[in-house]
Length: 416
Image 1 (cartoon, helix red, strand yellow):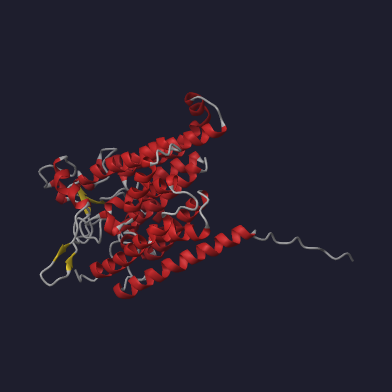
Image 2: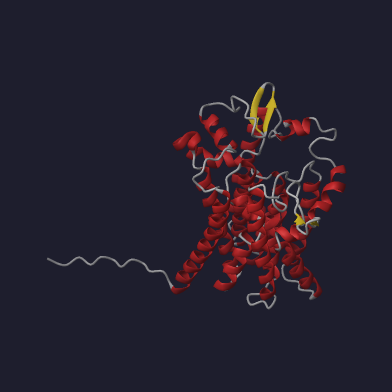
């Protein structure tokens, strides 16, 4: 009888093995930092999440109801025509639907939030490798972006306010990565999902479209009109996702653009509503506000409405350094996107500061985190493979890690 020869399993090539081990280093580093925070705060992934609006909403949807059926005094609930609704954009509840089907209100929100955080780090790493960063450099920038920034505060638990931002970060990085690799349908779909977490992320569509246009121009010498004719199918997924938001908004609040926040008491009772240009004057300085020294010599860190973004997320400072250097050196490569990024970020910040509040209870300044994936992209567009400036970012990364671990622990424990 002839002996059967089984096919050999395909082995990973050396570069894949190195990348895999590098991401293992990233994962272990993130988990170690999270464990320190969890040990001091008790917010382990298996602990009950009392701020589980998205799970509650998903459970009600599965039961055939758009409203929550009751008020939850500890959550930000919108009351409209005698019914109670989750007051946040709906996409995180889309993610929760299959889990709610299996686990109901006992859905393991904390583990899901952790999976989102690690997947976000994975895509940051993939983004860096796309720019041909060495493994050591990719590890550094991934850790700088994730645990060296204010992301720590919003990613160590699954509270409703932070879960959406954490998910938005992941979806934005995915949208950027797939735009750079020419997969426009995926890129725009993930962008539309991110808008369903943080609506102002709609502002970043021109950056993704510019990247896709330039990517297509590299391989096909077609006019803009011809490109539209060829790739119109890319618009199908984002349009379907957008229509789903509009239908939900209409059937809940009678307005395709209203997801419920305007029906919170803090905005219904506000003379100027949720958004107004007059708010910019008081809120814009909060993006740069330094902590004040107290009488006992300790710095007084604000935990409402935010502080200097370059302290809580030093990557913003790195971005400023790299951007200034690129313009001083008159580097022209990718100039359109490089100009579009800071312009869009500043417009985004103006819109954020036109909001009545700047995030309430928090460590650092969490609203500007929505721009972080595009700020990282801005750095990568001008940061060379072996850039001498990288070593000078290490102190900033250490500052970001130390401040955010200490600040996150302190705020969640009400020590400040």
